[in-house]
Image (cartoon, helix red, strand yellow):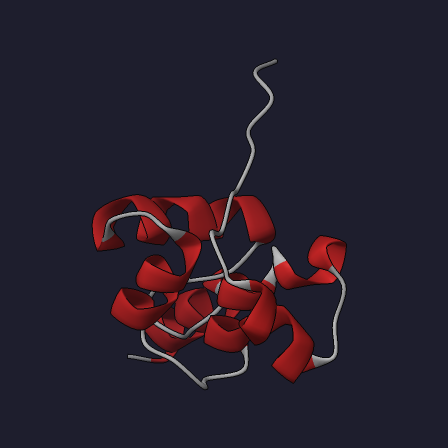
Length: 80
């Protein structure tokens, strides 16, 4: 099994303004996307990667790039 690491470059000023520590800040891009606060493009920039890679990385966190979880999508297909 290959280990992956998500790295987000940030300034000390940003960390202070968020009143957070480095360990929590590294998941900021994914969490902000999950909450609907940013688009995949903006989250990708925060995460320091291109949008396509970010979209594929969302699966590691059980998130959908289209804003619908797999069970909900399957239910919609059955009901269509």
